[in-house]
Image (cartoon, rainbow, N blue to C red; front, side, top):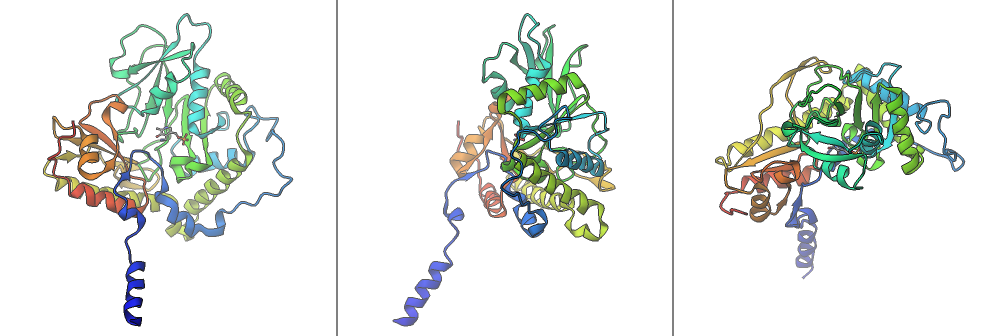
Length: 391
Ligand code: PMP
């Protein structure tokens, strides 16, 4: 009886993980847990200790236009952009920190609009666009700005703001403005312009650029984003918005972001730490995942397909590299609803084309989940037959 009892215990221990038992895989959101193992390996190099009497004041730097920006974070952001070469950060540009780049998007809608205009300013983005732009623009029913849809179809002779995401969420394409009218304003959301996702071909040099800690390093929960702004008046209006909506940004969160961005920059600059270069690590991981996904796509008998991206010379790595976007933009055979197909046939939850302003043959799948979840995703996609219409 004793050995039998023992074997019962060991088979209980070998039970599959709760995740593999869970019938549902949710890859609708881009929660970037993919890099957890990397940061675990960094151990105490990223630790931040804050004493009880520190950071009590609202103010970080009363002398700075963005008075709630921690000087250490300002420094770390500029240093990292210089090391990576993905954005111009000359000393005359303003950095505005926000509670994620989400708050900065709201701040920019406020800063780029004007109460003197007779009508709310039109906000457009080329489809497929990041699904939060219409949601955030419409949410407060503002009298300053309004959502005006797909930039490709914009034909009004009125003031507008075009939001450009490059590389794009959801489809990973490299983009520029499409409306290009005199006096048009643009917000360049460069959340994914980092070497793990795309070749760094030049230093972005736009009037207004948004970046986020969430996508750069995977620390989405810290809620830190930053804008790089040329015009002082626009930067000052953004600061005013953040003052009114949250009286600044957590100094603890900023210190953590500064520390981690600093560790990345040091790892990139010190060749002795080559194996620890975060961007090399991230790029290898993303490229492995894309390789596996493409294999599954090729064997799907055309049930779904994936976009192709041109290789380009990456100035950061010094070689030609592929794009490995944070999301896979799946297209199913004509007549199929891709989101429903994945949900009904494989219990994979994704976000369908209509949320991004296009038709339902498309759906968006996050590539940033943990390994176990990604492997399960591949298994399920490989088993799809396309027999459930899902309409
Ligand atoms: N812009 C884009 C294009 C995004 O994909 C996201 C996150 N999904 C954000 C902005 C928001 O980032 P944050 O976490 O900094 O608010």
